[in-house]
Image (cartoon, rainbow, N blue to C red):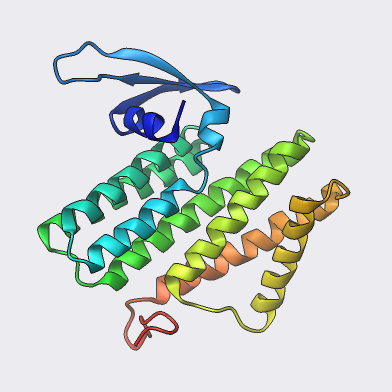
Length: 238
């Protein structure tokens, strides 16, 4: 199933359940059509990892161009994908992703209604969503490592690292000191995981630990945004 076709299902679907290999969606193709169940393989969903950020970047570009409706549609598409991802996680992580998707829907509505204060608010909404995805992917990596599933562990560690990097880019913050060192260690381990079969589970667990450190750091940074005296301007932005 192509990503565009799957997205069509996702945006109108209710998640019925998930197994180790597939998701079951209940979707109606038209307002007067009966609902039907559609089974979506996990492999198809794996191909959509990273797609929310593609929609985030398109939304930001459209927002700058003054296309509020187009920007809102991109945000809603990202929210739908995040709801799908929520079905894979444990209860706590799933609830966080569902909450994140709901917040994105609110952001989309604010964009349409002209109630978004600035592009910075949009960027921070995307950063928070990426951070929630990073935490989810990190938990999935930990689960895969416990099951000795090297392929899945590598996939989820890559997804988590990419989501952390995207969150950092949206905030415009650069780590310093010990955080910068941990950031470098995280990327060094992930580079090995991506390019070599000769990695150990201990190394992968270190990467999980470094990811946790970066998620906590960025989360603390975002809590400071909007507080009195905080610098809310991304690095390099006039």
